[in-house]
Image (cartoon, rainbow, N blue to C red; front, top):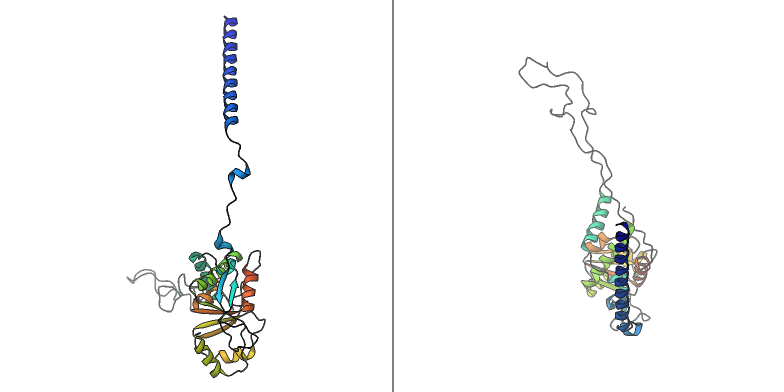
Length: 280
């Protein structure tokens, strides 16, 4: 009986092996009949999205003190880096960055006294029993007028942490939002020969730049321009390394000079390092 069982199992193994060989032969024949896949048969590689490499063009705004060497604003346009000025709009990123900035502005100096800090005697006000009234301890109890405050505010730091790359993306989104709303302009330069406000105010009104924040990329803001522009209502002036997302969103219009554009493209472009401005 043992010999018969061994012979049956050997025959079963031989038949299974033969079936496997036949299936492998059929698979090889099927693959040989299929056409060979080559690089030419796949066709050309897909082209990169055009919106990622297409620059952003903006008409040049005339300077306050137009010179003969300056380009003609009517015929000149400025090419902006789409990595900075054509970023996808992210409302969630703007909310995070604005909340982070406003948290840093909170003073956090509110302070109340607990029952242990209120001045007064520690003697018991009235007997524990016999008066028919509620039980009371000392006069610093939070239940009494002039006593301490239960769970009142104490000095604290409201500032929050946010990754630097999120703040960097928020600056890109804020600038791109102004471009899409057609509320961003570029001037060749920002300067003014006199400290008088009257003539600069007339120039700003003639250019239609009321309610505008002017941003310069210079290391120092021109003194004459700063003196003349600070008395014009609804007009602001700041440096490119001091502006933040909250200010960009507050102003209805933003005008940069060419050096400010270079600064933002250098600090917000690909493989750049951006240091967010500190909260004063």
